[in-house]
Image (cartoon, rainbow, N blue to C red):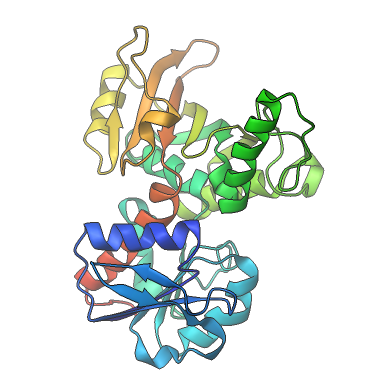
Amino acid sequence: MNIAIVGATGNVGRKILEVLEKKEFLIENIYLLASNKSKGSKINFRDKEHEVLSLDTFDFSKVKITFFAAGGKISEKFVEKASKHSLVIDNSSFYRMDPDVPLIVPQVNSNHLNSIKKNIIANPNCSTAQLVIVLKPLHDLFNIKRIVVSTYQSVSGGGKAPMDELIEQTKLVLQNKKVESKNFTKQIAFNAIPQIDVFADEGYTKEELKMINETKKILDNNIDLTATCVRLPVLVSHSESVNIEFEQPFSIEKVKDALDSFEGCKVIDERSDGGYITPLEAAGSETTFISRIRKDKTIENGLNIWIVSDNLLRGAALNAVEIAETLIKNNFYGK
C-alpha cells in the first residue's frame, strides 16, 4: 500500500521509518513529508534515497495510511484534511481525548478500533503507553483500584532540540562554563526537573494530566491515578516507579508470570546488584522491562514495580506501526 509520514525528518518520524524497515512492512510507495524548510532533503529507506516533500501541497488521496509525527499544531492544521482521504494515525496529543477518536495501544485495547468515526486514531503519550501495557495483564487478574506513578523521563520526549541541548550543556558544565537553558525551565545537565510541559489544573502539569486521563480512557475509567513527571538528563528511555493498589489479593509469582507472558513485556528482577533494567539498557529495544517487583506492606494488596522502555519506540513509533498492522490484519474493520 501507499503510506505517508508527516514529520519524517524528526525523531519519531525517523524511528517510524526504522520500524517499518525492520518489520518488512508491505509498502508500494512511501511519501516523506515535512515543512518547507526540510523540503528537498533526502532520507534513506530500504536502500533508496527518498526526497522529502512539502506537507503544505501534498495530495493525501495518494495514500492509504498517514502517520503524523510532527506535534499538536501540525496535527490540528492538517489531520482532518488528511483523514478525508486516508486513515490517520496521530502521535500528537491533539486528538487523544476526543471521544470520537480511539486512543490505542494494540496489546491493551485493540477492540476500540471497532468504532473509528473520524478516520483518525490517536497514539498515547509515550509515558502512558509503556504504563498501560504493564497494567493491562495485572488489571485483568487483580482489578486495579489506585495507582501512584513517578516518572523519570528522557529528554528525547521533547524532541531533537532538547537532546542536543543536554549534550551541549553537559560539555559546558564539564568545562566550567555558563549554562543557559533554551528548551528546559532549568539546567538539565546533572540535574532533575520536576516539570514536563506547562502547569495546568491544581498544580499538575499537562504531562501528568495526560497520564491520568489517557490511562483511564485506554484501560478503565474507574482506576484512580496520580502522577508526578520528572525530566532527567537521559537521552533515550523513560523510567517509571509505580505503586499499585489492587481490589483482590495477589502473589508476586502470579504477577511475574502474568507480565512475562504478556506481549511486549519482560520481567528482569533478580533482586541482586544490577539485577534490574536501566534506561540505557532499554534504549533501542522494543520491549518494556519490569523490575523491582515487591509487595507494598503499608497497604492491603499493594505492589511496587519499576518500568523502563524506549520512549521513541514503545511510546511512539512502534505503537503507531502496530496500530497499522492491527488494522491491516483485520481488513480495516470499523472504517
